[in-house]
Image (cartoon, rainbow, N blue to C red; front, side):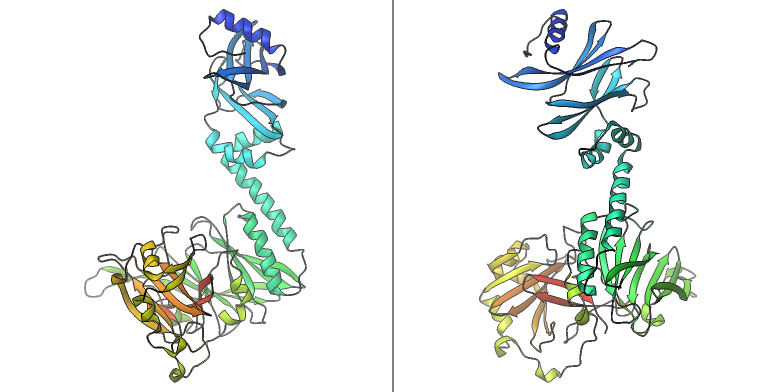
Length: 498
């Protein structure tokens, strides 16, 4: 038993050597220091007294010429050791020690690096490889795997995840479905579980759009961590399966719908240049055609100074509109694709009314502090159920005195107005848009900030709102037009033809 007291080194060495004989897990020899001959590495379990409490830990003795040069207390307990090796993984000329074992039926890896001859400490590079090791720990984990991880560092995890994703996504394209909706929803579950694509790039957000206008929309899955590696995979539904059509590089670019014919529009702008490319789909193959390219830098003839001016998308394709992307676990846009992709039917403005035919319906909610159910655009945020209107605003760190720009519009095409307004603190630009909607006997408050702390951005900058429910942004440039779709505690923005 190890006591937490100071003993003469000779006594400690003797005690260690004697006790380890009965509790040995594994023992091997290796030349730890060059040209000094083999040393013995002995791994065993022993008791340890820590502030009066007995604990059983695994120890590693470094023995050279029958002398214990160092004892490593791992502060872990291994039931058995499945492999051990000594090799120089920090490139200092002295071999380090790696142990693979089992503790309470769980695989465990212990790594110690040499700090000087026969002296060892916990591997200082664990932060760069620990995640990859833990992700790889299974019954097949071996010293070969560990050496690969240590040699490749964090990139090993990326490679393994990419290989797994490639296999999973490929297998998902062999599953048969009855229709494209079921196929895309099932396929996106795999995309969401993988988290990366075959390159190891993170992502999985998707857009859905009928490129060739054959009534079967394509699925466009977005990946990449920066402009240098942004790309999309384009899939279609054919022969009862999801099929990958092509990959498109998307750095510094956006996609727009092309309602007037076969195609999807990509707008690219970077370093003073811009380009509009139309991708058309025929026989499940994409072809690209440049519609326009030019410079975004212009010289002011009066001042001689240069300015930047981007070509409005609608100057190139008059009926184009921005394509929204959605999180892979939000499949409502797929279920409702026919609705979100259709032109909004014309309506007789004289038929618009308020809930319960009461023009004061929404103002009374605010004045009487009625009960609402508040739902953030971001589904990880708390849903405030059955909360007083004023308490809901307090949750957002606002008050009724900060309400601005109340307006009414028919957002769900039922000829009944919803109420839209903003709350904004004085001298702040971070507005929160709130939409009040009556559904059954309940009032829902949908909210989104122009700056959400969870994402760093939002949709809720003040915009023009048409009476039939379009939020119009940047009307003189790229012309974003968004609508809202909601059903109780589910809701999202989407771009629609206008």
